[in-house]
Amino acid sequence: DKIFVAFDKDSNGFIDKEEVKSVEKYENVADLAQMMWSSDANYDEKISKEEWDDMFETMLKDFGAPNKHSFKMAELMYHNLISQQKLEETESKYSEMQKKLKKCEANLAAAKEQLVKERTRGHIEERSLDI
Image 1 (spheres, rainbow, N blue to C red):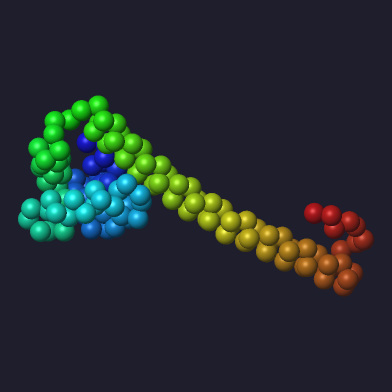
Image 2 (cartoon, helix red, strand yellow):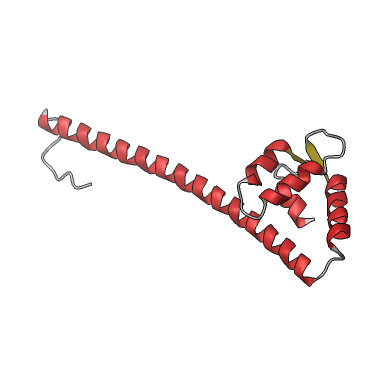
């Protein structure tokens, strides 16, 4: 269930095409994404929770009853997926912060330039521009 929820980013109860595409690039998840598409029983390009459960039931039949190893692999896949998503979120936030920093630096440079212009025109008395 945790893996389904991790894929279902918009929490609408389905894993849609875009949600699968967003994780296909991660190692250890691409194979699962391919299996997911093969489990789309009604070909609506989204995976319902029922289709998801059917996929895992089929996998268990094909590969044997769940054991410690299969649960460990599922848990590792889940943590890998969550880690990749958190990394992307962090990179996105970092990028936004970089943009804000550049804007602040540009505003500071413009303010310093304005002060210099006003000072040279005699509008501001002599003082330090150490900002």
